[in-house]
Amino acid sequence: MRQLSKVETLLMLLGGVLMVVGSGASVFMQSWAPYVFAPGTLLFAAIQMRQTYEGKNFTIRRLRRIMLTSDVLFLLAALMMFASKVNFLGLDQLIYIKYVHNNWIVVLLVAAILQLYTSHRISNELEKEAQ
Image (cartoon, rainbow, N blue to C red; front, side, top):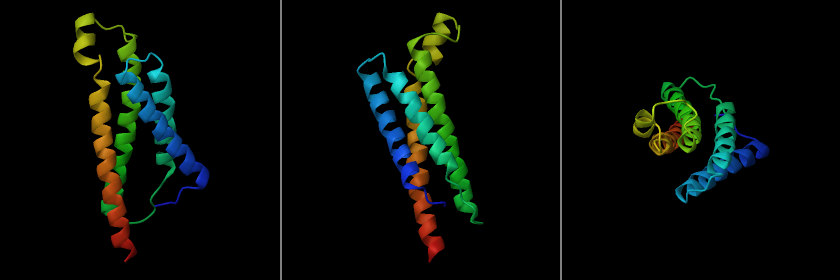
């Protein structure tokens, strides 16, 4: 895996902190939560997408694709967080409540689990490859 520079590492850390603050603020029903969560998600996902793997290990390439899928899910969770605040999608009220309202939490949970799994497995596979 390509090593991130110090600036990229700090931006990724800042994005992660903004994501945690935004999702935590949403629990306390703060109206500004999506405006903190979304930029954090954009920072985190953009930096993680810049980190590439040029090797031939199929397992790491597969895990990397799963990690990119979790980045897309993070971005979808940010969009759904905005949609939970205001029904800007123009959906019927019952459909909106059933499929959109606060379901960003489920998407965020799936993305976080995938992120945790892939980051752990990639580090193990890179250690095996180094030996």
